[in-house]
Amino acid sequence: MVEVLFLSSQETATLAEPAAYVPAVRDGYRQRGEGAPAEPRTKLDSADPPGFLTGYFAILPDSNAMGAYTYTAGFGSRDAHFMLPLFEFESGEPLALFDGAAMNPSKTGAAGAVAVDALARADATDLAIIGSGSQARGQLLATATVRPLEQVSVYSRTPENRRAFASEMNERLDATVEAVPDAKSALDGADIVITATKASEPVFDGDDLEPGTHVTAMGQYHPERREVDATTVARSTYVPDLRARIERDAGAYILARKEGAIDDGHVHAELGDVVCGTAPGRQSAEEITLFDSGGTAIETVAAARMLYDRARENDSGTCLTLSPASDAF
Image 1 (cartoon, one colour):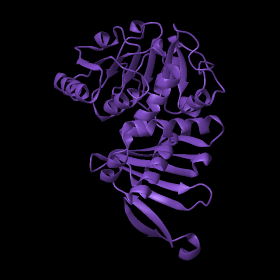
Image 2 (image 1 turned 90 degrees about the vertical axis):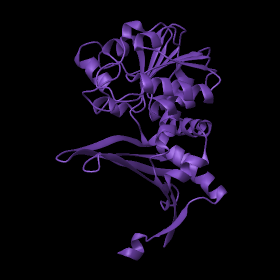
Image 3 (image 1 turned 90 degrees about the horizontal axis):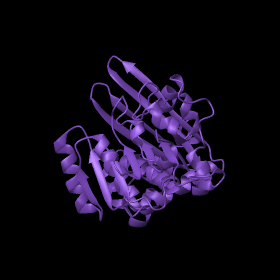
Image 4 (image 1 turned 60 degrees about the horizontal axis):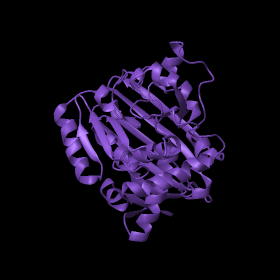
């Protein structure tokens, strides 16, 4: 029998602040840049009942960890359910099983922050965020750990939601956070733009981006949907989390290529290549950079390893026992 630690969402939420996720995820992408295996999302759709099952994998040898992230959305419950098994790399034995819901905005936000740190101007202080949900919250809190933000402008379609977001973030951050009436107003003067929405069509006009802006687009992973337009992709140094995603679910890239705005060679590098130094990051103050974040197991496994280690130190979680194949078969 093998002992496995089960960690609930309530327990993972108390184990680490947003700042703790960023170095763990940065190291995960450094390992990816040095050759660690990772596969993009596989998604299985259902029409009746409507929903999907999706998952992805990564091995991080230096973290002695590997795992998967899988979840369902829709179906009869009309909800989403996340599970994350974490394994030890050296032995192959299971270490933990996570209720993966609570950690999602923090680990995804950390991936965005790693990209901001690698691609945004070092003097970036003004941020525009499109979206006001939990993912927007995770992106902003993590980004605030890598740049000294002074001004944040938030736009989302529902005025009450964007005002509530601004009020909450004003309490949590040193920056001034302001709700604005439209996306164009949010982009005015922004050094960093983050999209964290469920939109199927672009949420701003790429011509409104000022030279030197960094964009993180993280809300879509569907070949026919996008948060940023072809102009944004074409104007940018384009960096996906995984290169293999551009043929599967990176809708912004796929549609920009289909529309003739870019050619097949438009990908600059994966984020891991930039983090480990095998590809350059930002090369000029005027350059527009774009991180296309569709979600990978790189940040998921890296974050899970960090949370597992903290849980063991804090005596958190519940012990389960699993049978290895040699016992069960």
